[in-house]
Amino acid sequence: MRLETKRIIIGILGGLFLLSLVLVQWMEVLRKKSEGDRMGAHYVVPASSKQCVECHQQTTPAIVEHWKGSTHARKAIGCVECHQAEKGDADGFDHYGALIATVVTPLDCRRCHRKEADQFARSHHAAGGNILHSLDNTLAETVEGSRVPFNPHSPTPGRDDLKGPVNGMASALSGCQQCHGTKVALRSTDGKMITFEDLKPDENGKPTNQEAVARIMKDKGRPLLHPSTYPNHGIGRLNLDGSRGSCSACHSRHDFSARRARQPENCGNCHLGPDHPQKEIYEESKHGVAFRDLKDFMNLGSERWVLGKDYSQAPTCATCHMSANTRNGGEITHDPGERISWTNRPPVSLWMDTDENHNVVTETDPVKRAALIKDTGQAKRTRMKSVCSHCHTGDYIDAFYKQYDDFIVLYNEKFAKPGQSIMKALREQQLLTKTEFDEEIEWTWFYLWHHEGRRARHGVSMMAPDYTHWHGMFEVADRFYMKFIPQAREIVHHAESNGMDAQAKAVRNVIDGILNRPEHTWFDKERRPGANGSKGKVR
Image (cartoon, rainbow, N blue to C red; front, side):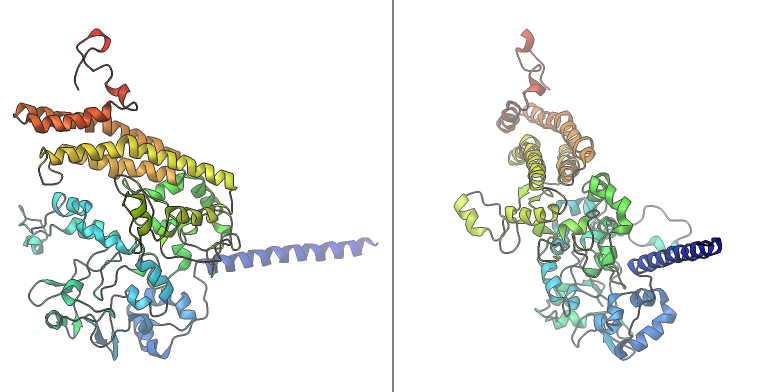
């Protein structure tokens, strides 16, 4: 072969090689653009929303651009299809010829997404608004704030408009209820708020209390949402039509991105912090480390996103709790509780046998309990195991769950149930006031189970050893032995000093009965009378 021929061949091969590099890079750019929902994809503006898009392209252009990148836009689903209201809707109003409502609820989404809406409606997420009647909300509404408005105690320089009453509910509204959900309210002509409780909506979301409808304050025909309750996209939001929840809590307005909903940062909007640090726990775990390293290879923009088919690099929160996999028929669920076998939210963890209303069965009689159970904790665990089995062997998975179960039982039996028993005894003997959080031991107990206890249990459930131990059980033990028990004994001592001998004895018997158990004897054995030949010290 002549030298010139060789040069030509080498030149051609070199050119092909460079061309292939350019092609690969171009395909990678397209893939990333597609996954990021930034690609100039084809979209169709339906006739019903043409005027909306043209107007909002000028007034709120970013919203329109978000919509253009959505699956809705590609399928000709526009503004009116989601925001449309019907005659009689409490929050409906005429907007340039279209009857619409500002707040889109799961009942609206259900028109197209019936299965997903029904799954969500029975989930614990949809019940997030129940915090409005919980101990947590007592903290926000009373301890941190005030249920009764009060006057400012001094002026705010430069803000003469802040002379009015202080909104004592501000902490609850801007904190708790932005995750858990608020009661969406309309302003009333009598200065009050109008919620679903006033409107009394029927099964179709239509108000039946016309007296409440007549009190709705309007501006040029538009019902005015109460500014203390909206904007709010809390997962358990209580809507005017009687539905619970907000699909936009996970599927952001207005692009409704499945890709974003599949990423742990999305769940971390609420699932983080001192009492439920799932996001931080996930990031510490091997799963989180793998996700950060391999995120670009996980095909997050896939239409179906099936584990074992579209990706296998790492699991996210959605992978384990909601998304499809090759061993469950490719089924997605919008009820995260379908794969959770322990609930680690309450003071004592409960096995997730649930009834027909998806409530945890607390009945202890075996026969009565069996009659109430609709879905077992074991069935939920089996569903989760089908996810795990894509990467782990059966023996590995079973061993993990053995470690998990052992840890939960240790927490329950050594600290949680004893703590509950002591607090119950103190209240039964009226050694605590009826007001919550006005005594130090109530704060101590709350920290023990609500903060340290949850961190420990969530840590072990997601394989994060530091949260399991140092941020978890170490702090549980410190809180129990160094604060909780001494404080309970101090209350007993004061009761004795005030002549309440019977009440003091009843509580002391509970404390001593607990500390006489083998797992606690290390703590008191040198303080007991007669220990080491001394009279001993009472702590």
